[in-house]
Image (cartoon, rainbow, N blue to C red; front, top):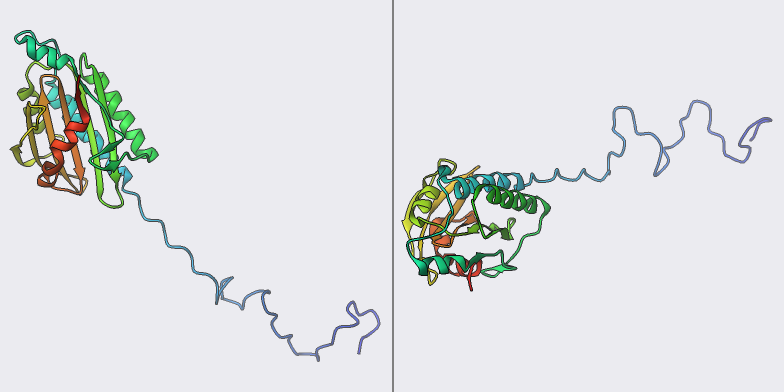
Length: 238
């Protein structure tokens, strides 16, 4: 029965000393129990740490190998063989839309690394006629490939290839000469590792270009199997 002055005259009254039954869907939790428990949705798992930072570090190491080579690279006009000079002059490198069936990767972090790579090649290589850098494939599927190349009139391809594979920025093993393909010159492939990631690396040098192909999570033998195809899509002669 309601009493005069009762603010809720139509609500049933609880006997003195009894506590009202808890209401569904609201109210404060019992003392010591966090809000939302029990029955609360679990917290989402912490996001996996991206490997992109590691990939970028490897990019910088590879660019140092390719472009600096101990500071040995010098591009200048070839004077001793006219045919070589003409062929070299007509050589260009490019980053194709796809590489051996892999689409070009477009993640912002990887593109930023490519921009850094190309800027460093342009500032280091003297008198280059073209540069190329790109990533292809899918990092999540462990099918990522990086290319870095420059064209120009190169006096001593063997010397530059030696410098690329003896740089201290990447430790190479199992390095061996491989078939350079129809474009000629010299080529080698080998194994490396950086930041705990396995790398299969192939590089080529001829009178008109120097380039490197890096297959992440692969061996040098696996890189060798696709090297000629990839080089033929990167290096072009008119």
